[in-house]
Every structure is written in structure tokens, then in C-alpha cells.
Length: 154
Image (cartoon, rainbow, N blue to C red):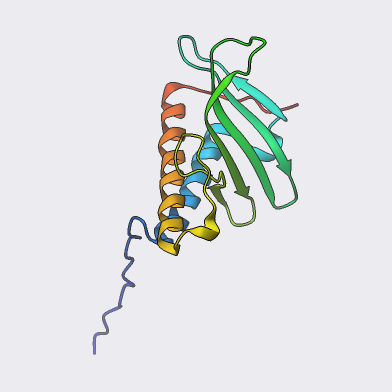
């Protein structure tokens, strides 16, 4: 008698779903590793320059045994006495044990309006997190294609 092996069916995660968001967190972690190399070895602050492009600033805001929190942004304009404009001002938490990275900024848009999650429905929270983490995915890919590089501390 022949027994046919059953191959488990792998269904890709749907966009704007919780499962899709978890997949996006994993993908963002891998993309950040490709851009930064060893995340625990990143210096506290670093700029990456490419001729004719905006500099990208990376700051390590918090380090612990299991997480690293990064602030990543473009710097617009020259340093002056006035406050330098930065955008998109992404605050990213990297989970070393789970191999995931998530945008934890509490803004769903790139203006100055903040989001209070307690006033949003679950669908709105998921949609906001999906949108911000999808932006991170696209932006990191763009930075890598443009040739941005970050040096590790000695």
C-alpha cells in the first residue's frame, strides 16, 4: 500500500493582519541587521553620509540584555543655532531573543499628531502599526540600495 505524505500547507500572512504584522517585524529585524551589522555593537550615535543625499542619524536610546531601542532619522539642513529638522523620527525597538524589530513611535502619520492607543479600536491600532512598520521596511530597503553604511564600534 502506498502512503502519500501530506505536506503542510503554508499560507502567507494577509496584509493588515496580526500574523502579517509579526512577519513584518521579523523581516524588519533581518533588514536592520543587514544595514547595521551587529546591533549590540552599534555606537551610541552615528551619522551615515552619501554625497548628494541627506545624512541618516542613528542613536542608541536604550540597551538591555534582550532589547535595543534605536532612533533613526534623516537630518535636514545644516547645523545652526536653531533646531535642526528631522524626519521621519522613527523609534525602533529590536528584540534580540525574538529576532524582531518594531516601530514604537506613537505617531501614525509623519506630522506632529500623536496617537493615544487607548482611544483607538483594535483595528485602528493594528492598521497604524502595520503602516509604520511597512514604512520602516520600505525605508530600510531604500537606504541599503542607496549605499548607506554604519561602522561598528571598536
